[in-house]
Amino acid sequence: MSSDYLPLDSDTDVTASPAITGTSTGTSGHADSPAPSPLPPDDSQPAGFWPVLQNRNFLVLWIGQVFSQLADKVYLVLMIAIIANRFQTSDQSISAWVSALMITFTIPAVLFGFLAGVFVDRWPKKAVLVISNLLRGLLVIALPLIFLLTQGLGAIASIPIGFLILLAVTFLVSTLTQFFAPAEQSAIPLIVPRHHLLSANSLYTTTMMASVIVGFALGEPVLALADTLMLQINSNFDAYVLETGKELLVGSGYGIAGLILILIQTQEGRSSQTANNSADSPHLWRDMQDGLRFLNQSPSVRAALLQLIILFSIVAALAVLAVRLAEVIPVLEADQFGFLLAAGGVGMALGAALLGQFGHRLSHLQLTLMGGAGLALCLISLAAVPQQLIPSLLCIGGVGLFTACIGIPMQTTIQAETPEAMRGKVFGLQNNAVNIALSLPLAIAGIAETLLGLPTVLIGLSGLVITGSLLTWYSASKVSAKA
Image 1 (cartoon, rainbow, N blue to C red):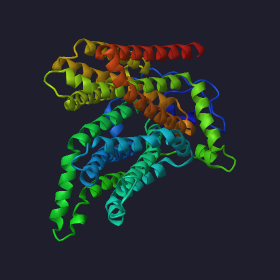
Image 2: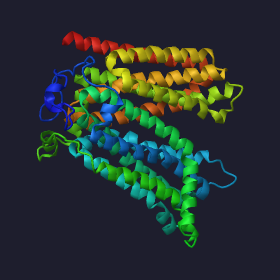
Image 3: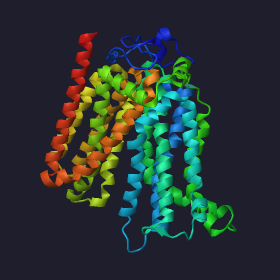
Image 4: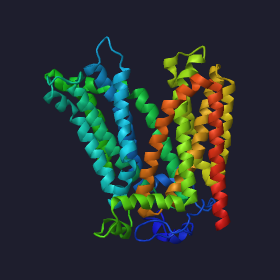
């Protein structure tokens, strides 16, 4: 990889960064030789979160991520609240409404993830980050007005027009997210030096997990508070207008993120951007082929992506199995499975924090192999104590911790070893593949547990973890042999 693809900020000298060799790119952006394996840690550089937070551009990106991630999580809570208040009747279960909503939210990730990444490579990352957030904010804020204008329009095939509009807005919000996600991932290595990428991704993951916990746990009371504050501002407002506090709060979260991200300077390579936007640049299909070709010629990036797909499949399966696990634990009810998932979130946040502070002392491969061994052990242990609350919580917390030990180094490897001109394609493909990986276990994990039993499925997942770790080790040894 040439030095043109080094992640730089205004305070970084190319000569101070670790050398990167082994990959060159043509005008179309695909690799001509395999990407190198992760470099050994550089102990001469300061590590931890503080040096990363001193990077002004990353600080702006991180603060924007905080608002955007919280808005994402509270958005789903808002949609469920709207369904419960506007569309669900007293004799209906909310499950069918919510299932339609979740399917609509997932479809754009499957359809447009890779394609969005191709466009992200062609467009300035800053513009994508800002516009995607502002448009999402406008869509959410416009919901009350849209509902008001469509009142009394009836239904289509027994489905209220208002609910179809809600699904359409959700589809658009999710589609815009498909552009935001690869742009955000592509921006990190542009503004963070290579030796700080692990800490940056650890902070990114910590924030993401915190937003899940805070967003889902506090979403409902915060939305209720927003409506209460709107009522106190002026009690003479029309009653319909007074119900817009929730939408205004969530939309403002996206809007604030977009406004903050205006301040970021991504320092993109102008040469690669010009090549991607020139009149003779490849067509979209050619760009997509370039992304696949790059993965085929870059064993370490391909292995990291495969490891992430396996990892997210396991996480999705555990989300389903947590319901059954809560059911068999005597002191819990099935609908209290959130306690178990929260333990996993705490473990993942702890693992991300530890990696951010101390992970630079080990190579990405060492971290991944340790994480794989620990994750497999936790799954096997969980299979042995499925009816005991405290041991189960400890095992699930360990699952989260070791998941971070795998996921963060693999994400860092992809960022560090993907050329700037290819990052949008690779992250778009990653987003697409991960969402498919999340969908399949949701469909088969429950069936497998019914047929085989919970312990057998957990042991099977541990075998999948070990397989992924072996593939990563094999890929690394293969790259080392060619070097």
